[in-house]
Length: 174
Image (cartoon, rainbow, N blue to C red):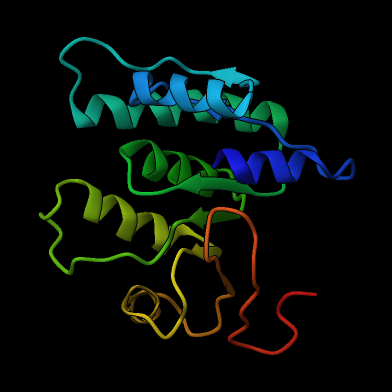
């Protein structure tokens, strides 16, 4: 997400807010430092011996406060973490559209990998916009198309930076 955050921050007409939950803290801190991206919010939700239910509820409660305060036009979530799913659900509860970055990758088995496959499936289902890492002709996107409504817009990327727009319906993106 850092390349996307950096790109969005170049546009003065787009207010970009970065909210971290702290899931996968060590990797997160390294990436944030490498890209020189600072968080506007850090929910720091991780606790010793935390369960998936604990992560989910902590993210949803923390995100609810941020969403009510900031009132964003869209919430972008990334990947297949429990944080992504819970943040998408929190946005849905506030009636805020969700964009899922790295949408569409599937194994077809909700228990493999567990819980990531279900997190990704549910995040996609909640989402209004899909930002897929693969070309539509490749398996990941064709699998995504099976799970979403046929009129939903999506974009594909050859890398984490916005590269190419793909439309399933003419005029969906302007």
